[in-house]
Image: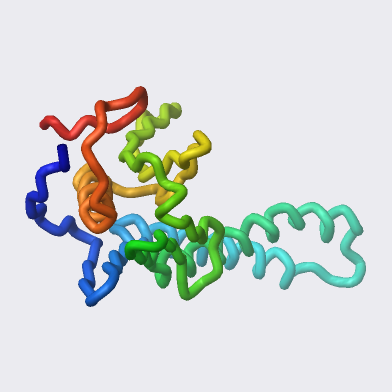
Length: 189
């Protein structure tokens, strides 16, 4: 029995482009927190620039060396902010493969999976607990024919994004419905 081919509304921060032989789904990384993170990053790196500007040749070596970890954190944070501000995840799906690319800033997680290797595709919810409370993100996973579980897309903001991606990819690949598995996000709501 084939999964019912219903039309879902395109969630916010996703763009869909239909072509003759493939579909491209684009997800924007930027969110309401991005400007706040950018302000913090400018403040953090500004303090480091100030710190090094007040040093002179008579400053003890430990005073010069001490903030190196902070500098590394500042550089990493600046790279992350630029990536979040500019990057988009491009998901290309056709009969032969699923390809995931993060651009224009290089980022981990680029993948290309032949569709003949795919046994199953599902959405998953991740709940993270911290002192500030909990946060939830969503992922799309692929299970290959040899049983390997591959994270296709991560850090989705909403279950709607996850369900939409799952639905559209399954529709293009003409995948049959399967019984829910442990850890799979339930779309019954």
